[in-house]
Length: 193
Image 1 (cartoon, rainbow, N blue to C red):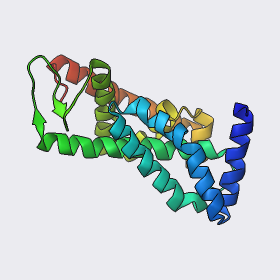
Image 2 (image 1 turned 30 degrees about the vertical axis):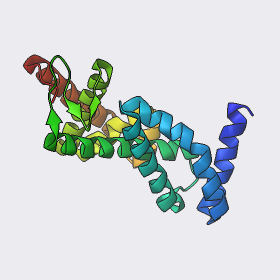
Image 3 (image 1 turned 180 degrees about the horizontal axis):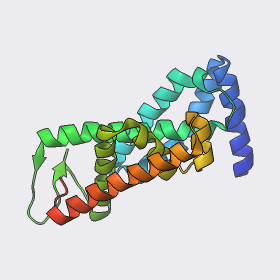
């Protein structure tokens, strides 16, 4: 089966699931689970954290499939859900981590017993910056998530959010500036936690 065939099968299952076919919904969730897990694993360093975000995303799909209007491809609808679940999982981990953090010599902090690598630390810094942006502007965060993580075009974002293209561009630019300043400040302080 080619990627195109697989994508078409997902689209057909999504349409049937949206119409209330529970068998199609089960098949859809099974079909997209590896895609969602890979996307979560790119953002979260620990496999169990990626699995948690993946499960949350699949649950959101199951609960909200009727909101998929079919005007765009299913994966266009899916990926922002995944990104929000990744960010939510990160927020929970951060909260848990602040309650239970142990420093080891010459290591990054330990969160729930898992050492955080340098690469994972960079991912965590980005997630932290996204969380910071979200606390300042949910609108800018949504635009940045759609552009930089879900990889939507500016036109797709404008259509999805029902906004003028200039507003979308302004939100993405302003959000990126906040993230850039936040990361620069963290680097200058030498802080990752």
